[in-house]
Image (cartoon, rainbow, N blue to C red; front, side, top):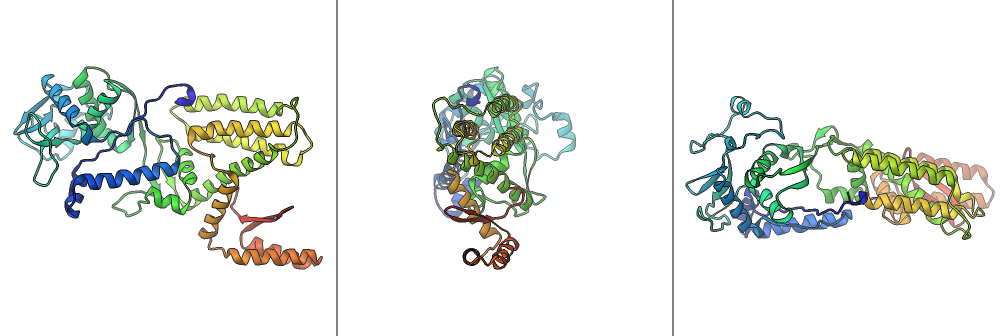
Amino acid sequence: MEHLGYKVNFVYNYTDVDDKIINLANQEGVESTVISERFIEKFKEDFKRLGLRPHDHNPKVTEYIPQIISYVETLIKNNKAYEIDGEVFYSIDSFSTYGELSGKVLEDLNAGQRVEVDQRKKNPHDFVLWKPSKEGEPSWDSPWGAGRPGWHIECSAMIRAILGDSIDIHGGGIDLIFPHHENEIAQGEGCTGCKYCNYWMHNNFINMQGEKMSKSLGNIIPARVFMDEYHPEVLKFLILSTHYRSILNVSDEKIDQTFASLLRVYRALKVANEVSSFETTDAAIANKKFAELLNTLDKNIKKSVCDDFATGELIASIYEAVRAFNGLNLEKKAKDINSAPTAKLFTSWLSKYGQMMALFNEEPTVFLKAINDLMIKRRNIDAKLVEEIIAKRAKAREDKDWAAADKYRDELSAMGIDFSDTASGVEWSVKIDNA
């Protein structure tokens, strides 16, 4: 959005009081804030490691209790909510458009789903806005007695306190569409009378090796574990290469493809950085045809971003630019005064979109080594043995024993090693198909 010129006020809230936090705190015999702060700090560490744009606000539920209470009071005043025995419920019958976001019809819910019926409710699907706290739970004084907020009210109250009565974009997983986001709309519009949100962006699930990632299957990989095993760039690229509304299928093959894709881009960047230092003149200009291609890709990317954030198409445009740059073979044109301006144009262009996606911002040589080290580990390759064979091949070439040199070359190839002879020595890396 900022790339398109919009001023963005980005809010990401922390739910620092809920049943799971309270239960874990009681198990460990600590205050619930100890648990919530522990996980918030872990999240911040992962977020920083990913190199993502910082949020403008990170509100915590416990910091907005007065605003939440005021919000509930307004809903009661507007005849959208009612209190029974110190507990406040939202009356969904008072909100005529309830179910529009999810496409659910209340009559169908009542007929087709088992609902734990609380006889005090006006409608079985009325949801809690405020509830009395039990022993061992955090609580705050309110007009309805000591208690704590329900799950749904927290988001609506913090949104209004920070962003106002209406917001442009609200994100979240597809599993939150109903009932959470449906309830947020009912609360927001029931409180203010204004449209709650203009656009909803719901990301789909992740499949691991063909199965939905879930705690019940035991196949959840925490972000930090994935980053340790692969690389933060790999995680970001995986996510961005698939449209956020589509299921992200993660497999060993997909990860290898991601490695290959990133290597293509970073190898091109490495070449571009080297070519940028070639001699040039003030009169030199970037390759005209290549510059025109980048201008065309700019238009395609803008169209992709405006089409529900089609990041996969954006990455496809970057591939096209990389292929075109590689096709120029500028590393072999040191005497061409236009080589350096062309390389600088490419790095500047890629940096623009890299900043937008938080990708391709690593130093190429450092990144390529990091990926090679990871691949050595993944493929169980004996790096010391590789170096020994390379040394033997170098000695054979020095002795003009070409048969022996070819034999060592074939051994390296059989081990899945790519290598090239350079002025500074042999450079080698683990072979990745299509990289």
